[in-house]
Image 1 (cartoon, rainbow, N blue to C red):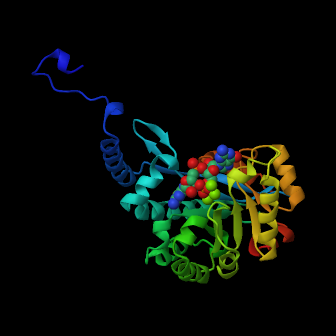
Image 2: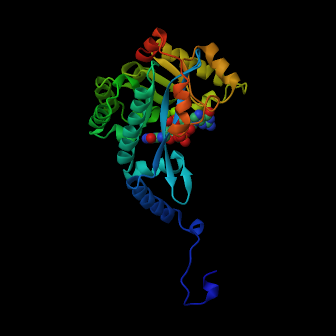
Length: 294
Ligand code: C2E
Ligand code: MG
Ligand code: MG
Ligand code: MG
């Protein structure tokens, strides 16, 4: 098209026509700038006790408010951040932001059980020698009770280097934080690892939860995951609960916690304030549940 206008015209590229590698480079530059420029946001999704229907905490999920492309989801940029190493700065920022938000909610609460905060860690963060220090610093900076923080690590990240992972998880655990295996069921973790890792929570991958109700083998898978978690003395969490049928099935199966659109989408912190303040006052049962897994 540009050519048709004559030899002396500059070629104008439609970005969608550009080489994917060029697009990636551009997005990477924008992400680097966006992180420095404060374009990242954290949204929060409630973590529900299935039996009591009470939100016991939230999971922090990063968003990027891109100046021209709109609100981008982690799927649009997390891999890029991971490959480029930007995830270290991004992850440290999310952690600090989430802990700060959790501390703020808990300061504002009147006699309610404190809100727990779950934060995702990427494989690259897991092998960062500074990770423990970063976590400790965030907790100290915002005077956040370590037992209210849960760090989520995907099963695949753990399996990439189990020996290294064990060392890191042990060091994190020593800070007093909780640990969760995220996307469980997708990475073929063996029972041996489950037993040896100092894990508090197993999050059953959404792909299995969404299969509940479709009359396939996912009933058996989800139910076995819950039993497995309980057999090693940890909580079972279902992710991606979208229907009331899934909720009641999980309740019958004895699953402890659930997250999903059935309860709430991840929301900006001001929109979630109602969820936080509507929680009933602290009861001894809730206190126990917050401190001790199953
Ligand atoms: P995840 O940790 O397994 O988070 C759950 C994802 O499922 C979130 O997607 C959430 O919005 C979505 N989800 C929750 N409930 C439902 C539901 O009922 N139905 C459906 N269809 N989806 C549901 P999101 O926010 O796009 O995040 C995707 C992944 O990106 C996360 O998966 C996590 O692995 C990663 N991620 C998000 N934030 C961070 C972060 O701050 N750091 C790192 N390293 N990774 C992050
Ligand atoms: Mg997660
Ligand atoms: Mg997950
Ligand atoms: Mg997932």
